[in-house]
Image 1 (cartoon, rainbow, N blue to C red):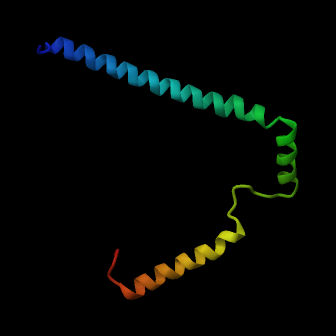
Image 2: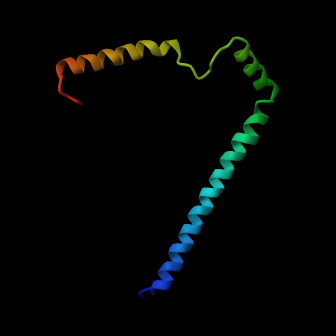
Length: 91
């Protein structure tokens, strides 16, 4: 049975509201995780001691591992070789 324009608009509006509801739920959940759960986890004694150790030694846990440097050098060499063989490629 064909839907009237008003029925289609009502279904579309309901879908849009549902999408905004999920978006809001996701945003609030991420906010609670970031602003409440993570700071509480940082106070757990085992984690706090790890954080203090890293801060004391001035170690950045997000920094690249030195073991990755060889891989990067190989990648840079591969890119240079590719450009030497194909000077007009990608430009």
